[in-house]
Length: 182
Image 1 (tube, rainbow, N blue to C red):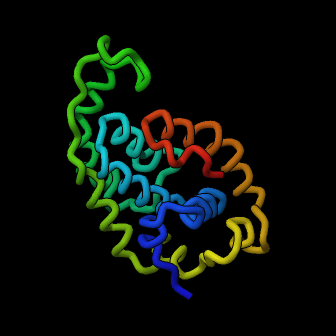
Image 2 (cartoon, rainbow, N blue to C red):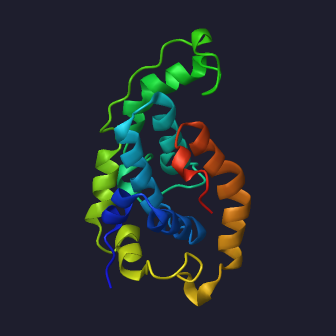
């Protein structure tokens, strides 16, 4: 059975939460990235663009997606596009600071991450294709995992990286719908 991930993203109900939960627990972050890029396109902000890069695209990112050909250090397109935002961030205190104390944020292009999403979607054997083939929306996120439970590595990722570091960074940047995932 093949699942249409984009149809689940469009619904925005419990099925979406379950899919994102499964992806976080199984450490398959590419569908989460694609979903968040959709959220970013709806309301692009500097903080959201920087969070997507820092969490999923940077060479040292803890949640780095499997898209090496379109990410630094092999491809500097996204890094070059983000340079004005990174310069702005160096002057800005934090996303929740008093807006009057910050220099105005540059408005990022809403299509900034589209070439990365296109790359992920073009790979039928990539993570998006694998999740589409293996995920069963009739099961819980945990039941979808091999053996119906998280491996020690998956548990460590969720408890030591996703919950305390990555998820709060994304929520602080404005991705509120991700707050309850994993």
